Length: 610
Image 1 (cartoon, helix red, strand yellow):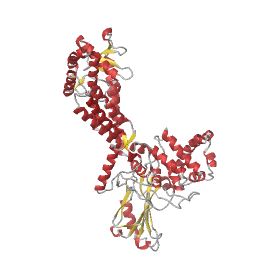
Image 2: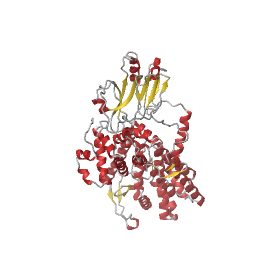
Image 3: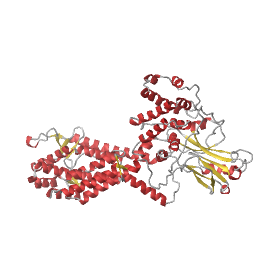
Image 4: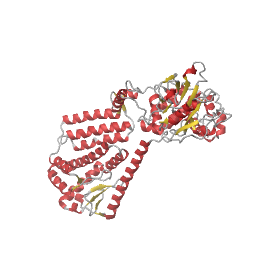
């Protein structure tokens, strides 16, 4: 979405400036045609080619520079990281105990900007639909078919009289028709009115008005899109006037202009109604009359200038920079996620934020400087610095990690449940476990309670999408660790190239034979949604088959693991059925029961929750 906003805004600005600077020096029909590029940019996701410089590439570099110059606060929407624990090749044993009921209210991560955007589309779309349906009902209730003499007939385009409409118009998508008012029947004006509306039909303006409304509804939040809709509507009328004069001949230019002045009614035409209209504001009317009287003579140098500027604008708005296409980050980008697990670090302050920005917490002031911490993709462990050198394992004080909610509900460990999030189809709960040995039984309580009370989670679907996208080219194991939390819908919305490059990299990694048990688990814990269909579904199926082909025993081992929930297992089995039917030509697998598939995969015992 960010790419569409940036690129379309730049393209609209360029065309609006050209329109202003070359007023009266450019063909109205060419001026109108330029807006088609804006419609394509608004409706086509992604980029079409690579270029040395692009709008999105420049924006990324500028963002990187700003982030380097400014302090980096912990936002409420920061990246996060997380996988369930890895397990041995023959399947893990369940932890002895797990979680009591949550100790605090859980918070589901909601992508509010996405919800607001979709709600805006719904509202604007409904207003557009209702406006057009009401207008059509009014026309249909009052219209009367006119039989015109052959010399002014409009072919197969019907003409209706509607007494009280403000101005003549062309309306209708499937069966367009011309609607005129009583004033239009004046013989001095009728020919010009009908020719004007017939020219709108020849230009397809009733369809372009629908496209204009669709763009405005989808991008309702962008004022530049509404400006583009207004300007393109004005240019639609200018192009129509130019087409009428070309059709009637130069000798009727002034007569047509006079008729137009008499027929146009003052007002602002609706941008959401799919009809043409002879309604215009004072400034727009003045521009139309001026261009009719002094028809633009576009010089070759002007044509060359327009072509040159628009080629450059198309290149930087429809193209991706070569660095971005190759997966290179902006120069000196501050986004540099480290390899995990990290080495131990001393906690010198009372406040702590995970390296990914996923969560933060505080410890009592008197514990600052006395703790060492070790981070992994999704959690953190705090150690007693004084005791660590002699007894590292016994010095572990707090362990904070995410756990699948279904596991947390089944296990009975005496741990504290912190906050819940659900971004990729399965809910997870952050938990806090602590050292219960007598040595720490008294002193650790304040540390534990402060950490639990101050814990703040910043997870959202967009956060995990950004983490995966920012790491899969440079740190694929880390990106895979985030897959259980990845929403493909969020990923597709944020990144115009879509999931295909990521799926291709994952498939190549699966074929390399370097994918370990935990990474099999992380891929198989990922939930696909409606975005993974068509080409994307074929790529995901190829990934599943590559995992099975490379190591069938590991594939089966993960399927029988208790670290895979029942819902995740069923989801992966459905993909395996589909993959086997395509790549191994085993259509009978589609009819196999789950038990038969398990035997095929060497799974003799299932352990699962959920």
